[in-house]
Length: 114
Image 1 (spheres, rainbow, N blue to C red):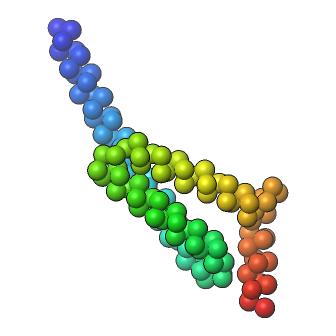
Image 2 (cartoon, rainbow, N blue to C red; image 1 turned 135 degrees about the horizontal axis):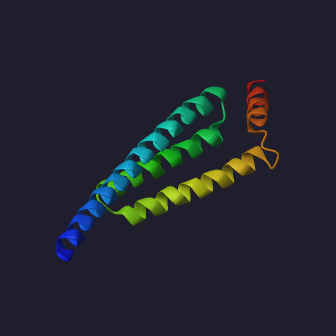
């Protein structure tokens, strides 16, 4: 009886583990898609450094997705976590400690277009 319960629990863990990694693949797709939109926006307003960073982020999420497809889960999570940390640091450098990112982007875009 105990053996049957254990096999049922293992089956449930396998399903939940698979669902977790499926969700991580979907998250990588969504994050990459958001970065594509940001690439378009940054390119449109003339912020090339931010557009370049968006390209790097898209690459990181695409590589993480491929790693998840090949079940290289820890490498994928390392890529995702690294991208999030670097992205947050870069955003802080661009926005500054007061967080007025949009005002800075608009001012930078106006200066470049003038």
